[in-house]
Image (cartoon, rainbow, N blue to C red; front, side, top):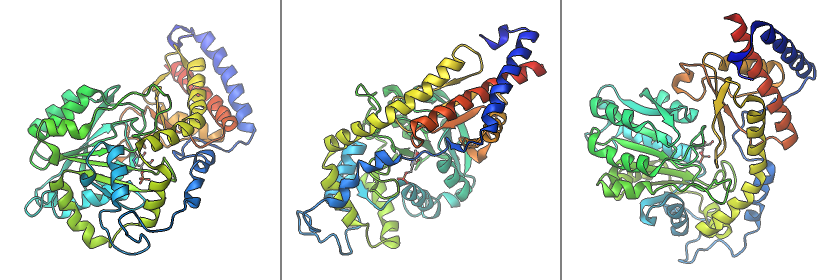
Length: 424
Ligand SMILES: Cc1ncc(COP(=O)(O)O)c(C=O)c1O
């Protein structure tokens, strides 16, 4: 029943029913958690073979991976990263355990030294702003906040950031130095950028201020839940077509392929852009953990190997995502109490409550023993101007726990929505 169609008496009766259900959950003393965007133990176990990969420590070209050296990472690991991110192997550096660290170091490098070398340091050019599609990934925003870079939001659509607005802002504001993108299965909405969006991103460098950077975090490049997965156009090819390849910096990792925080991270860019960053890398490291890189390469082999591995993960994750979506549609379809995304991959579902209710819903859920990501977390400075967005993370809990958590979540959404209607 649509919220707007209920008269006052019906609203009151329904509120009492929902409150009774809510109190039952509250009294059950549950401790459930829908905040953790991390792999569950069954997914992780699929990579246990990493520890039994044999064949010693020496690579095909005679490199002893136990020793120092090789700032760019093993050639085999670079080739794997290149296949994952859709670039040439020489455009990739295979680094340590975290792509987020590479993103932070890249922006620190742009800020302190300049993305294109002497004379281009962002800190020397007055106010620096960055475009942030919202809702987005909180840790991207935290890096910018940490560096004192002002964040300018643009809305996410089903096919990527609202590109009319992105282009208009980039044209009129020379202090904009970059944009964050998660082009496949965005965090938190799970959207995949359309071909047209990717092409327009490729063109952005022709209208933006010099040394503008697209921080393209392809963390979920291989994280399809279904065999008929949506295809992401090649972002580097789009940049090459428009002659803007120096504006693109790609990131990825095997954190959610093998082991979270214990895989290989990649940074990829044109020879010019990567060359500038390599100058910093040569200062802060003697080289990555090549032993880990070698066993990953032997374990995953190539892109086909990654795809096969990810199909096994999808079998574990699909029921979790489908359970979440089933709860949402059974209880909220057509109710006028919010909307949500139905991702075909990635790690999250994004729920938009009625404006002004996200904080209430998160609070109600917490009192009933369900921890949700704090309202506002998906926005710069943790401020969602509509107080509407809630990020749901279905991957970690067991199905039974997820089922309970979602029963409580929808009751909280219904209760908050009805109570607001009654207050009017
Ligand atoms: C979009 C996105 N990028 C990066 C990361 C972290 O990657 P890494 O483990 O390689 O630092 C995450 C983790 O949740 C993520 O969602």
